[in-house]
Image 1: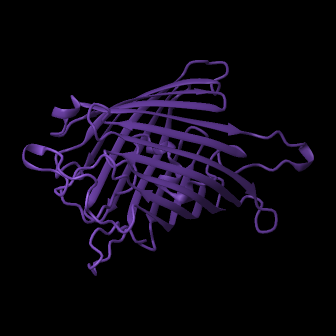
Image 2: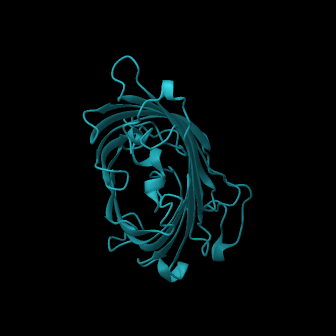
Length: 337
């Protein structure tokens, strides 16, 4: 194996609608409450040696505006991303800050602009890698350690992300968010250089995302939820779509207990040159008062399923909202349902 540079695309999730900072910084503060904790964990391809472990943790809060317009508000969030994959244990760890400002044109139309700045560390480990300099005839180990010369096995970089989100809502159960975002506006360097004489720069390409997160109330006890995401990063593109049915199990206290069942499909062209699909995934979600827990499982549909036995991997997510009880003298309505 000859290796001169290592690069990677961004992390992704099947339950992208719970990975807010990965979809759009403008989703910061877009929820019905005062504070929100969320997390999502993904394990992919455990059946093969190049398995992926990925998670995101996010905390955000919002504050209604007092001086400009009582219905406008700001959002502030902090998040952690981590991803590790393969024999090289190529990893990405990020810490980011996100901020947003929402203009409430009416009770039903809100426009949010968001900005995020993140610091990231990408690294890999040579210990379990084999190179042409260490392997002889028949794959025998002939030299230890490798003579490959890497200037560095880790790098730190800053990223700048921005987005817009339009919220259209008629009730707490009928609403849609349409968002457009761009990541790595500064295209940071992404090169682990094993050949110091090269003059070629390797930059992390910008990623563009278009998202749609919608819900429609059909009956007193049933909603339809639609989630869509399209992403483009250099030559890599991804389309994800999902439909879910949400059933309110407690008719007297409808918001206390609800079960959602759905199916999603992801198409991408980043799987070993594959351009015929990626995976479909069943998903389940349970809502109880201020807590949401989601579970999904990827089933591969491309040629690599020979190795994975169609098993892409599980994903689990959670959201917990905190809604403060304010004295009547200080009460202000939140424009987000």
